[in-house]
Amino acid sequence: MYTLYAKRYMLVYTKYEIRKYYYILRKQGNIIEKDKNISKSILINNKDEIRELFGQYDENIKFINQYFPVKISTQNDSKLVISGIKSETDKAVKIIEGLLSIIRKGQPLSLAQVKYHIEMSQNNQTVDWKLIYKDVIYVFKKDKEIRPKTLGQQKYIDAVKKNDIVFVIGPAGTGKTYLAVAIALSALKNKEVDRIILVRPAVEAGESLGYLPGDLLEKIDPYFRPLYDAMYEMMPSEKFQKYMERGIVEIAPLAYMRGRTLNNSFIILDDAQNTTLGQMKMFLTRFGFGSKVIINGDITQVDLPLKEHSGLTRVAKILKKIKGIEFIYLNDQDVVRHRLVQEIIRAYEREDLRNQERE
Image (cartoon, rainbow, N blue to C red; front, top):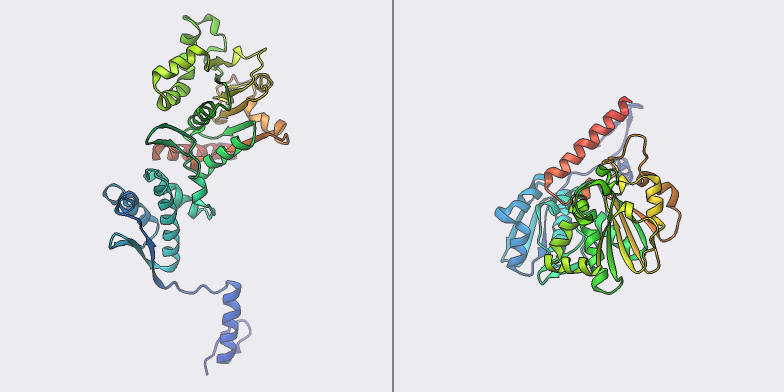
């Protein structure tokens, strides 16, 4: 007779009873069975997919192996074989299928995207990767497409499609400004709007631009450099200058927006964390018929005087229930710059939490 002793009651069970209770406990999740080694295969269309997936010097696959101890190999250039413990193999297969969906949409695969996919899976976030890369926001050369690269960025794009005013709040490097410019240029190209208006507060000058030397463009040039950089990347400089001369693209300091009504325009307010409550209200009421507005900001980088409250930090409480307005929050997982930018943001967030706990 096989026996199982219950320490508390010193009871003896028969083999049949042991089996019965084993299945009950396993069903309840109180018994975890040891993983078995398995192999799974994924069909590959061509050698280019393998080359893109593995990356330079196999860096992508090596990175996956740091998180999942599985063996990844090719078979006749038509199949990928993933072998290892079942739980780890299943996770690796899911990651690789997601990465292949990027490649099959003609997108170059970066190590940052590999890392993003792994982090999302480790946080138990269920994501349909095909949905993330479904939208081409803007094409500025034959082989240059701008697409969302993270789940947060896809939500950003979807929000702009459904709403007339979208607030995008998140740390540096999450693509807030870059995507806003791409969406605006796409709307202009498709004749959904007649012009693009780029707006930014000039906090460092106290909005007193009249005292600075030079004409208006020379005065505001330093403050609009991030928007210029995005524009110059997506169109030839000659075309940008032509748009500026014809008023199709307009650069407007926030202080110069008062009293205007902007119809059939795509308006981008960048660096919105540096608007006051009054300035935010003033800006939002410039909105006219046939227009769309994107308001970007990073609430951790407020440069206002200490006595001033940021209009961006308060606006969500005031406007969150209004139909046609949506708030999108990006985080460190949406950072698409150098890997170190993501680590720096996380380090500062940890320090902020420690400071809050001390207070």
